[in-house]
Image (cartoon, rainbow, N blue to C red; front, side, top):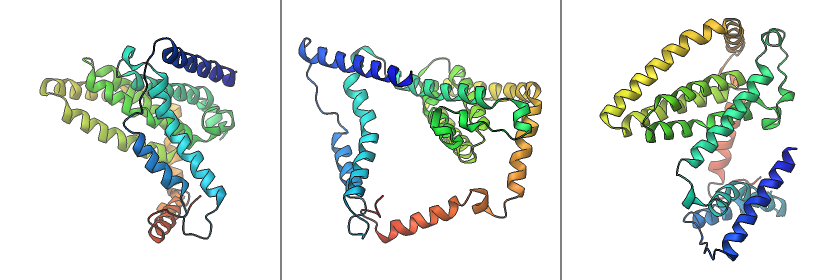
Length: 273
């Protein structure tokens, strides 16, 4: 069903593009970021050049990578009529995707009895191939949308409330990387929010942040006390059983160090795929 929906959406968008070009005589130009994507694509395709592992497969995989990155931008540029859409369209889209992932996380994992007996049910995740890190990352990606709306809207407490719900959704995924990234990104984005807003609006934002944080801090543990005990006990147990930061990060620290070493060895084109 999902594939059918995607096909129908693609046909509808492409049909509208064709109608614009043929009947409305609309002229499309290359977007401003085209040159940047071309340069980035060249480096992706030539990734690993001057190394023994560089071959046609690595170049093809680099091409796939840049297409997967650039296609989203170009689809939004050409298939959406920005004359009839507000600038916050993309913010709402990102937020919607994040909340769909939160709802799926709640429906899949929010069962105390299953958490007690350790049945994660990650295989039931449709999003992110059943990997909690992918789901947490997708939810984290929606944070920028909330801050954008908090800056541009007259009622900042609404997107800020949704921001805190997003933090709760990330915690449900139990993805350590997503939780660290989400909380760090939230702090940075909130600081940006307080800097760019005017004095009166800044006061409103501070009041909204404080009120929401206190309210949720009281209500959520009260209504979901059992879950929070289980969640924090498991998190603390994971920390205690880890001898060092590398073990806590599931050997990611070693991977990061090796990646940096390889990058310094071939700084221009890297080591390929």
